[in-house]
Length: 278
Image 1 (spheres, rainbow, N blue to C red):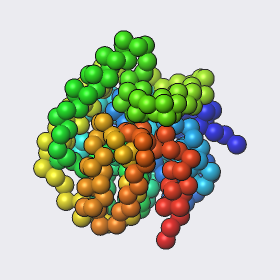
Image 2 (tube, helix red, strand yellow):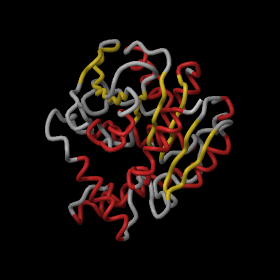
Image 3 (tube, rainbow, N blue to C red):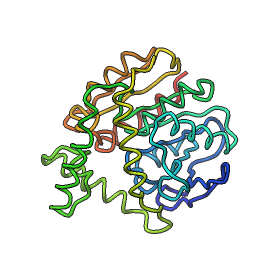
């Protein structure tokens, strides 16, 4: 069986822009489309989550406009990112999908559900919060501090952003990066400086935006986070779950922004059960 480690990269052209994507699992039924985090490319998805979901579902992950191996430039607005995601889904010929959005991808997933409600059947929102959440102005300082620590220690910034700096968190980080390294070829292009700046601007602007009416999102939503998220305060996930008409909240202990990766053994069965529920 093909796994996330060796599934090939494909492209689809939309209005002259080539979008890079990978798919896994048996086609048929409603596919699960994955939307990724700040500065992430296809190679940054945790194989255990993609493989776990693909065991029962058709999984599709892609680099949105201007990200990684996809052409053009990243827009600095969440709504435009959502419109690009909708265009990608439509270009593949789908009229209904499930969405898995992590961090920035969770914000984009909300835009998709608000702009095209008939397109979305169910959503999983991890490590994310609603537009208009307070304190998001701190994001550039948090990210900047993590990058400084990463430079000083020659580590990936996600060691400091995704996982607690205790024994359990450090072990989880080491295992997470070992899983990312399992893919040895056909890599995505690293994210550009323009993409990172535009994404950060979209995140901070979204934090200052008027709150969305999440009651308009009628589909079932699974919300998950760690109990101490440095990037998107964990209470924002809880607030979002309260404002969604049909949401379940899971908070994993002793974990942060990457809590769903740290606790992937518990999280994957939760996703599968959620997607299978009537």
